[in-house]
Length: 381
Image (cartoon, rainbow, N blue to C red; front, side):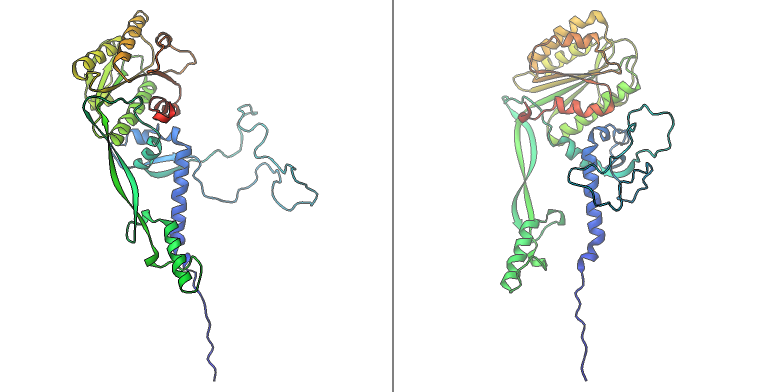
């Protein structure tokens, strides 16, 4: 009597299929966020999140692979005739009129789908803030501002799953398998696992204060106010995420300027005419009284639609030049729908000073460019 045995090897990777799919999906989400960052950071779901840790944002390029029907009948797939050669164009995506806006009228083609993804605000911040910093930082008399960074400096046998050092883990498995006469990376045993650990590194910087100036006059419509608040929303999150002791001062103005609380700055509406010099004068007074240049790195950022009292523009120019003598950077952002600059912008463009920077925003996605312009890293200068 003979016994029959069947030897089989179970593919354990199948048990990890769900985990692999989830990791691949998360990677797709990260890539989609990075690709669509200028549009995502201006989403109302984020700006009005009220401290929530996750938000749902529409992402255009987040879509599962699937078979699509060729509506244009261009025969771009199928069996070839064997007569093609290297360099031949087999077909092009879309029709000649696709995307031109000059079609014959209403069409039957499907549009681009947007998918809502549950995204952690911290994930968006990490991508957005990676290359931002307060520019032109100088050493002052009493260092107080502290920046926190993480340094991976050690490898251990135990740790968090997210900190697995894949390279060292595979090398440990390779060495162990080779010692047992079975050279190869698999199997990987628990004893082969290696994890990276880190230490928190604190860097000391000189004191810094940032003044946020916003036009709240009657000419600032819903779009203009939303753009200004979006910029300042991300600015405050960036400063508080990257710097531990930065001071923030909020100033709103119409014909008169006043220092307000952060809550009032982001929620309170105003009306009336516009005199931007009132905000610049108040900023100068605050700097002179509370933040002497020898002790503080000072930054001022002003957002307006530029619809300023024309007789006030020369006064604005004079006050901004005085602010530049006391600040590391003065940034002016103008929010306009047209392709023409305001008389205020034209006046400020006369300034010949490396510490002055200006941007024009005509679309929500350009808030991203404004952040990149005003908060360049030292390497970008």
